Image (tube, rainbow, N blue to C red; front, side):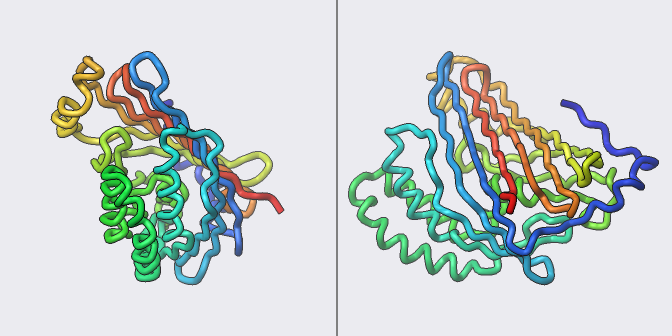
Length: 285
């Protein structure tokens, strides 16, 4: 889709769009992903979790997350899911400070998170002794926890929930969203930059809708060598890298986020495509 920015003359009726959270907002999060390889499906996963978001003073916010529930998953990945469930306990409570545009500034309880992680690592040593691949998996997370601010900022679920809208930062509705950095799924550990545009609409029943459209920014030629090393022999085709996203945010009459539907698509070529859908809903009381 191609979005046109809000026109200045139409912005007056959107002046009531504010940045707000309920005192203890409960959200259900459903994440569904699909990976193709060649002409068939390589993997399909669907998970759910719950977040309780509690705003504090001066742009501080606390998130309490539940254990992830696997609705659909590859049985061969079960041992890794068991490890991941233990790892995620380190971030069951995350305290953030936010920039005025709603994006994440830093994790303010990083010491508590790291202390939890050190305790969890002791329990995970059993898995390290069982299989070398488990050990490598745990070592990757060890690096991530020791750079927790970057890890949380580039976690796509957190990026979606805390998308930086210029209007929240005192900007106009036509100002550009800053370029963001995310982690590639098909090139694990590699960063990519993406740009996005947005349009804000007032809903007839009250509240607002924000539509987003984005794609990777800049030259992705650095992926060429990785592709040739890891994928080309299997896929055969040359790399034709594409990364796109589209999202819709619905804010209710209190300007509180009530629903998000967000799609991300990463494509190496026609033979390997990853699609992920995030559906976030505010639980009604």
